[in-house]
Image (cartoon, rainbow, N blue to C red):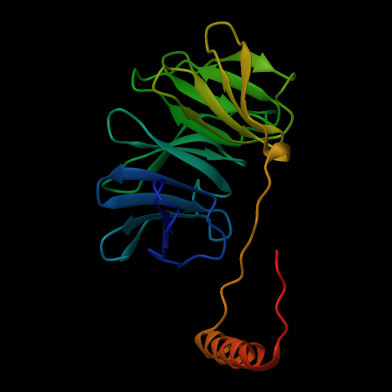
Length: 219
């Protein structure tokens, strides 16, 4: 679904797959998504909700995360086959790096073209020319990373079990931006129309009764 950052309003775009692991904007009216449950890469028209399958199975065994590269190709982290690149027109995937022995769960690309990967408690940079990974930051505030993105200032923004933080890609310095545990979420149930009507009638009746016989107090 789409959530407005201004007022928090929600709009369902499409619900097709049982497990959607990640989404990314391809253009103004196009979303890309991966589903581990179906081992599939798909495209959603955000205006009509129409869904198109781009790639399925083959090298896509367990896709966890995706990002759009500068040339329009799609980068996918697959827990079985590593870092993949998918042609957005043909849907044909190819392996960039096998990432053997490493569990990587998220990928992000900066406006300058830097590729970043994350593990459970680590952030790496990935050199697209040599296919080498360099550890940027590990541990500290990073305990259980769920997803990463690149901020406007070039820092790596991390969604972690412990909160949201930024990581300087040059120094590895971590800054806590928001602590999830400090948040208080209040849920207000919205009654069904019939329930609301009955409650309204009940309140009207109660008000009439109070007007007829209820005592009054001076405050």
